[in-house]
Each structure stands twice: as C-alpha cells, then as structure tokens.
Length: 407
Image 1 (cartoon, rainbow, N blue to C red):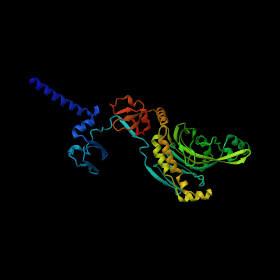
Image 2: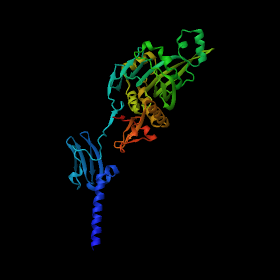
Image 3: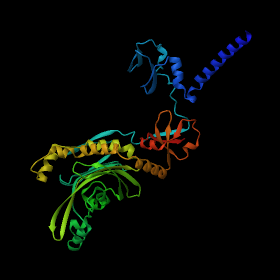
Image 4: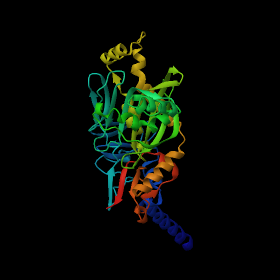
C-alpha cells in the first residue's frame, strides 16, 4: 500500500514538473500552440492587430469576434473572458526585437504615392520623384519619371522615334552619301527586335538630348534575359539587364515595336520606326521588390482628351481610335504582370545572389515574423537563439522587408 501511494505521489509530482516545464519553455520548444490550447480550451487561434500590437484570440465554436477602436470583443459560446489577451499587454507568442539588432525598412516598403498631371497626361508616382517631359510634338511625345536621388529607379515612355535603318549596310550607304543626315547618325536596328533596339538605345536618344529635360539614361551591354510576352502592337516585352554610366548593374522590363517602310528599291533602303518604347528599372537585385510599384505606376498613365485630339490631328489618321492610344500603358502593364507571374524563377535567384555577393549581404529570415532581410555579411555568425535563420533558394523570390545588422 505504501509503495502504491509513493508511486502515485511520484507520478503526480512528475506530471506537475513536466507541465510546468512545458509552460515555462513553450516558446523555445515550439509548443506555444499546445500550451494555448491546454489553458484556453482549444478553438481556432485568430491573430488581430489592435493599437499597433498583435492580439491573440482563441475563437470557440459559436463565437463571433468584433474589433473596434476600444479593443477586441468576443461574444457567444461558452469560453471564459480570459480567452482574450488584452490589447494593452503583449501577446506571449510575440517576441520584442532582440537587443543588439538594427533594422532599416526597405525603400520599396516605405513608398507613398502622389499624383502627377501636366494637362496632357497624368500618372501616379512615388513621392519625391521627378517627371521630365521632352520638347517634342505629340507623335514623338517622351517623358521619364525617376528618383532624382538615384535615377536607376525610373519609368521611361516614348511614343515614337524614326529614321533607323534596317541593316548596317544600308546605314553605311548613308554615311558615305549623306553623312550629315539623321539616318547616317542613327544606329541600324538589325535584327528588328526589342533586344537590338535597347542595345542601341543610348546612341539613338543622345541625339535628342537637347530636347529632353532629363539626362538620357546610359544603357551599356544590354542583354535580354527573359521574354515576358508581346505588347499590343506586336513587339516583345523583355526582362533585361544592363550597366549604367558608373558600371553598376540595373535590371528592368523593356518593350518597343519596330516597323519599317521601303523608301528605295535600288539600292534597297528600308527606314524603321520604333513605337511605344517603354521601360522601367531598378538596381539589380531589387526588381522583385519594385515590380508591383513600377508596374502600377505605368498602368496609371492616362492621356487627356486634349492630348488625344492633338495626337490624331498630327498623325492624320482617318479613324481615330482614342481607346487604343489610351490603352498603351495599362494594357502593356497587364501583359507584363501576366508574363512576370509566369516567368522562370531561376534568373531571379541567381541575379539576387549575385547582387548580394557584390553588395556584401546575406539574406536571413526572421522566424517570428516570416520577414526576409538583407543582412550584412557575418550576421549569421552570431548565435541568435533561433530568431534568425539563413534562407533557402526559393525564398529569394520573396520581397525583402529591409536591411538588418548587428548593432
């Protein structure tokens, strides 16, 4: 009898010790959900945000949850009132930022928008950006929206440029015969592709620099790396990368449509025009973060009725299709979105790894929030007790929340 009593007492004490240990070390053991269920009666865990703090509610069957300015209120069911963690107390499953860590939000996360409207077209742009509009007619209308602190963040639009030749052989004829003509100055676009056009972009647009209030972007060593689709006039939409004037890599989405007309049969001369040259860019490794922002700005472009009337007056079109002109940017944006979502992700991973290595970053994941950060190299050499972990390759496809470093 004494042995049985001692054994039962031992079992009770052991059970109390084990439960106490689970409660005390639940977070470290990853048993928070189990502890919450034990002491709140189970139910569905609902996480809300109230007054800037996370509120954890164990919602029981038959209950309704209402959130207002005074707090989170639960009604119905038979759950006790302590089923709610008060809004003025930190939820136990949420950890405060660790000491010795400094976090800076990414530029893309901090973006706010403003409206731009010059009476001819309007669009939304990130606050602090500048819009430069070229001194040209409506047919060749050109503008660029960009960050004056770093013009690698930009959106460029040109309605039309012309005077290109179909082959270098044709251009050589003009260089010999009419050396001062525009066709002798402009590059040949051979073959007639988006990729070839942007390989020659800077040479072409520098001839118009005096008409532009912004500095023509220097695009060196342009390379199309993925075709995302075709624009509404038949040209391809390419994801591309190039080097800027300082030799830094920049990536973006680029499109145009090249069309030609034969003006002389012998020697054969075909003159080309480039329609709707549109692109947006960000520094290499940041396009994944900036894509939604830049693409939504492009989609927001609207031409005024006055612009449309003047465009078709100058164009001399018999049939005025205002909807087609108005849809240039937002339809292009839709195609970009579709192509971007269906793209092969391998390039993203390699591109961002290359960018991180160049800039001295490694990427880490906050295991509490799920956010991805660019951390200074060596960050993971410190023991963060499981709060931060190195990311897997597929996580390079996720936007980054910002930058993190050891304080």
